[in-house]
Structure formats: C-alpha cells, structure tokens
Length: 110
Image (cartoon, rainbow, N blue to C red; front, top):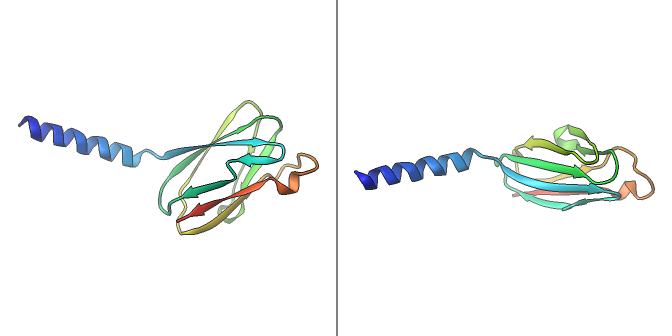
C-alpha cells in the first residue's frame, strides 16, 4: 500500500509539472534582446518574463499578432504556445534610437 501511495504521488507531481508552463526570461535594452534566439517546442506553453532595463520598448511577434509595451523596471508576462515548427521573429516596435532597426530576435520552434 505504501508503494502504491508513492507511485500516485509521483504521478500527481509529474502531471503538475507538465501543466506548468516553462518560464523564459528576456531582457530588452537598447538595442538588443537577450537572449535573441530562443528554442521552443511546438505545443509547449511558455511564459515570457520580459524586463526592459532602459526604455519603453515594444515587443511584437508578427506571426502571432502578439504585442505589448515593456516598461522599464517592470516584468511583463506573455504566454504563448507555438503551434508548429519553424521560426517566429520578434522585434521592438517602439522607436528607441539609432540602432532600433536591429533590435530583434526569433524563436526556433522544433
């Protein structure tokens, strides 16, 4: 009976971990996102924790029509679940000065 109870607890713990989205920290700072290349898995829910260090940057994922403002000193949470393998670009869409055009990155979805 004790072994059965331990197996049940292990199964419940595994199910809870499977339902908890993976958290990914991203930093926005003139004129880059860190990290700029982020591996994801199709069907895996993730929560992006994005922090701007210096400016009210934007974060835009055109293929998902997902957009938010990033206020300095705050963590912005975005949840996404990529549906299919491929590359999803993201970029800053609030002009932040010379170099703004290169402030981008992408998700590599496998």
